[in-house]
Amino acid sequence: MARFSIGTAISEAFGLIRRRPLATFVWGLLMLAPSVGSLALILPILGGMITAIAVEGADPDQVQNAMMGDMMQMQGLSALLNLGQLVVTVVVYTAVMRAVVRPRETAFFSLRLGMDELRVAVVGLALVVGFYLLLLVVVLLGVGIGFATWGLGEPYNWLTILALCLGLIPAIWLGAARVSLMVPASVLHRRLAFEEGWKLGRGQTCALFGMMLLVILIMLVVQAVVVGIGSAVFMAAAGGMDWSRIIAAIEENPIGALTVLFNANWPWVTLAGLAVSVLYGVILTLSIAPFASACRQLSAEVAPAAEEGH
Amino acid sequence: MAFSATDAVFEGFRVVRRQPLALVFWALFYAAVMAAAFAMIGPSLIGFVTATEQLEQSGATPTMEDFAPLFQMMGLLFAVLLPASLITSAMMHAAIARSVLRPGESAFGYLRLGMDEVRVLVVSVVLFLVFMVLMAVSSGLIGVAVGMTVAAEAPALWLLVVLLVLATIALFAWLFVRLSLAIPITMAERRIAIFDSFGFTKGRFWPLLGMALLAWVLSMVVGLLGSLVAMPLELATGGGITALEGLEDESLQVILQSAWPAIGAWILINAVMSALQVAVVYAPFAAAYRDIKGVASE
Image (cartoon, rainbow over all chains, first blue to last red; front, side):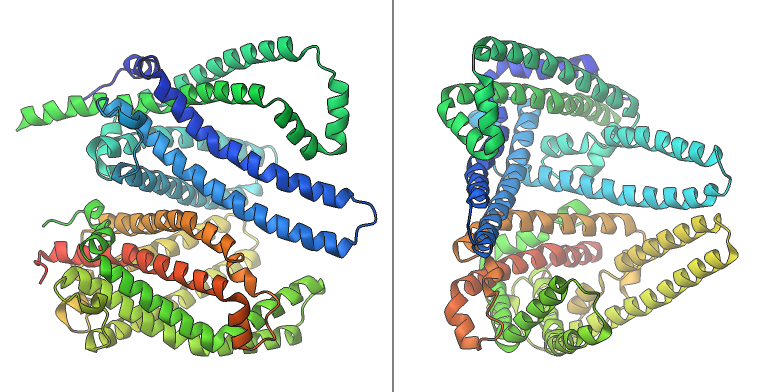
């Protein structure tokens, strides 16, 4: 049976960050941009709404009408930005996988908008839909079992619920590990590789699950370290500030005060945004690249074996 | 060519790439149908939406008398919409199947109104009735099972009710897949062939189910990408169909004068999106039939 090395997969993710730091930063920046864009677009609208409410003696009907218009505008913008975020997510995820499975395609930070991206979107969405369908079946069965065993009385009914939950959570994680190679396999094989991904994951569920846990642990450590350093820098830089005035202004008009605060300190906010982009890019690469690497390792082992078989 | 679900699922895109004009014809056809439908039922539709909103906002628990005018309006809307949508669907389904099975007949974006369309309409109506009857029977069975479980005061029977619901869903999925090639067969063989689909789908349930789910997911992706274009257009032209609010008592002329950019943009966007999504969802089934049967496209 083909095998992959968790160590190789994870070190390949770190290797990618080391080899292509600018690409890692751009991936993080792209993922962050829609969130920053939504803040920049929605904060002024929210601020205007709060100011309109606070005006004394204003006609409530007029305020309500104006707010309805603002709310519609905000909802439209927010929906548009959410969609934009989805598209960016697909493009960036595909770029990270492409950087691992086809390392020579480095132009534009491995970012493209083509069939690979469409396939990743379709496979990803299909997995999400499949997950929810499966969850629906499991929940229905759980409800049935719950009704059936409720009559047993305490503590058996609670023990049944506990057993169901304890069974369901690892099952979801193991299931996610089992299908985790379908998306990278689709980038590697340039087709909707449900079958290839499924076959590659056969007999690897525990290893993939273990890698998933390890990746989460590494991400937690990286986040803790970066947040720790960031907090220390922030405390050192902003320690002498008069926070009582700022807090008072935020309490009076939170959105307006935050807008003023951001505008007044835009160089620092930009710097923080760039730092967060780096962190985001690193975390993203660490969470996606190992699975792409595992997929490539397994495919490389399966292909020669198949050739030998002929 | 052997049948591959993951290849067949992209047939809608292949059709549009092969004959981009077909998409233009389909979108124009949808736009014309939507515009005609709007001209016929526009004021009634706006009135229905406003009446529903007023009922919701009144806060009181609505009685059957409150619902009566709504039902009347809805009946009127369906009397116009149902036949129109059946004929429209039959023409579109036939056009999409034709584009895959007889790509040479590309005039008018494969759209026709002939015997093919009549046969597709008959097959669609029969399938609709079969599923409705099954739905009624299965709902009745589930209702009886729930009633018996409550009456017997046996909680363990709830598990059987859940299993019955899941079995019903599975039965519908199975039947949907087994009958899914009825329209392509009818188009290809120029005869009404409803149950021949069972023979063609035998032993191919899972690939066809996967293909159907993937086609649906692809249409969702198309819808999401389309929304990226549609939303700014709708915002720029007055918030889409919500621009019609407050115009319920006006004549069609006044409605068009006040909200034509919003109506026009809404019709245009929905026409293009509907045409593409329908192609993405239905073309794979025609491709599946073509590949299973092993027929070369005419």
